[in-house]
Structures are given as structure tokens and as C-alpha cells.
Amino acid sequence: MAGSGNRPLDGEPLYEDFGEPRTGQDARAAISTAGYGAVLAVNATADGVDEVEGAVDVRGWVLQNSATDVAVPTYNAITTSVKGGTCVLPSVTTLSAAAEVIGIVVLLRAASPDDNARQIITRLESTADGTTAAPTVLTGAGTVQAVVEALTRPRRAAPAQRRGAGPQPGGHRCGAAPGPPRPAAAERDLAGAARGAALAIAALLRPLLARRGEWSD
Image (cartoon, rainbow, N blue to C red; front, side, top):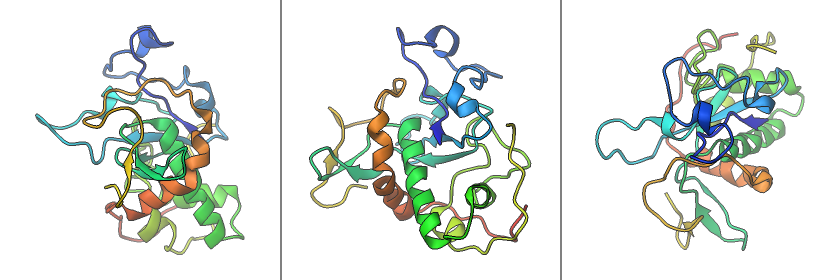
């Protein structure tokens, strides 16, 4: 599991190549861990970010990466703070997105203990709100549908073929200042994965659009 990459800020590594979004841009070769075939690469969506003028362009926060398998929202997700309380994530960040999916995988493993890793990945991808037949560089097979689809829909035996190798009472925001998020810096906090289970609860509480229809391989 790995984040598919945040948009670097001026002075950070990869800024010269990926500081500004461009048509056809692909960070697959630059974000090594997410590019490995055995790694589930997770991107973050801008769901929940307030629109000021026009649509929100998530490319201001995250990289376009053809290694992306799935995506989840992170902005305003509820997690635990370092002091044990609850806080609200104020940014669109792929490291938190990966941690969120780790938490969802923990729930999937508990709900379907006989499923192997490939079957868990199949469930995540095939129940996302996109399609494995036409993955995108921002969401892969789509946004994970944690409750209605991934955790409840019966799974067929044949796996899908993967490509390539609001705050609760008393809560507060993580970080320094509230308000609209700025483009996130490259992830440095490897301890973020430990917040996965709490972030998964935030994903379960979000009104994500569940995809209906027959299970597809």
C-alpha cells in the first residue's frame, strides 16, 4: 500500500518536473513505491473541498499517476490526534489516503477472513465507483465504496486483472490553521499509516455514491 504522490511545492524534490499539472503528465516512474506491481497505489480525491469559483481541480494537490489503483477522500476526514482526541484532516493528501485504505482493508479482512490479498484487492477495485476496464491517472478504478459495496457485496470467484505489475463534537483540526487546504507537500510522516483504522471510520461515515449493478470481473 502506498500513496500515489502529492504535488510537490517549490523547493521540494520533483518540483522541477511535477510542480505544475500538465496534460499527459504521469508520475508513475518518479513515485517508485506506488509504481511497483505488487503495491496498491492510492490517490486522494478533493471530495468535500468547498468550491470558491468553479470546480476544484484535485491536480493542484496530487499527482497524475497511471499506477493509481483506487482513490479515497481525505479532506475533512476524522482521525485521532497525537494526544488521543479526534481531529479533522485539513488537506488532500495521498499518504492519509493510503492509511485510510489500510483501515478499510482491516475491516475487509475481518468481514471476509478467508479472502487472500488478491481477492481483497479485487473487491476494492471492482466495487469502486469507476471501472477497472478504463482506469484513470487520478482515481484508478474509482473511489472506494467502503460500506455499501466493498463490505457487503458478494464476491465472485474469478479476480479482476490489475493493471501493470464533518468533525464530531469536541473535535478539532489537525495542523496549524483551519480554512481551505493548500496544495499538500510531499509526504514525510510515515507514522500516518497507523491512523488507517480511524480514517476508515471516516470513510464509512461519508455519503459516498455507491455503484449499483452486477459484480464485474
